[in-house]
Length: 205
Image 1 (cartoon, rainbow, N blue to C red):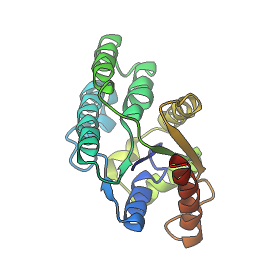
Image 2 (cartoon, one colour):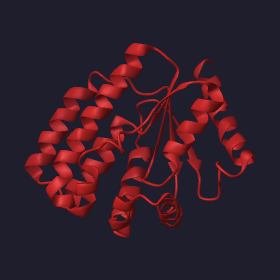
Image 3 (tube, rainbow, N blue to C red):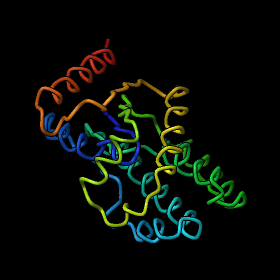
C-alpha cells in the first residue's frame, strides 16, 4: 500500500504522516525541508530562488517515489509529486515569480518524470482554511516561514481546491481539518483512521 498525505503549508501533513506510520507500523517518507539548501533563500527572495527550489523539490520527490515503488513496502508519503507541479510551480508562475521560460522548462521535466510514476493507492487531502494554516505555521515557529505572505497561502489554497476537484489519478479522501486536532484529541485521530480504513478496504473490494 502507498498512501500519500497532501495539503497546504501548515495543514498538518507531516504530523499526520508520522502518526499514521506509527499507528500502522508502516514506513514514512517525508518532504525534504530541513536539509533543503534553497528554502530559506526562497522565502527571502522568491523570484530569485523559485526555479532552483522547484527543481530541487521535483528531483527529491521523484527519487522518493521511485524508491517507494521499487521497495514495495507499505508506505505513507508526506506530499506528492503532483503538488510540486500543479500547486507550487503553477502558483509561482501565475504570481510572476517564475518566468515563462523557466516554468515551461520545469513542466517539460515534470512531464518526462511523471510517465514513470504510479499514483498512490489513496491520496488523503487535508482541507484547511487560512486561519487554521496561519495558526499551525505560527505554532511550529520555523523562522523562514515568518516572511510568508497571507496572499501566497490563499493562492496556494485556491490551486489545491482546483487540483483536488479535478484529481483523477486514483482514490481520493478529503478530510476537513479546520475543527480537528488529531495531535491533542485521540478521538479526532481515530476519526481520521476510520475514514482511511473505510477507503482502504474499498481498495480491495
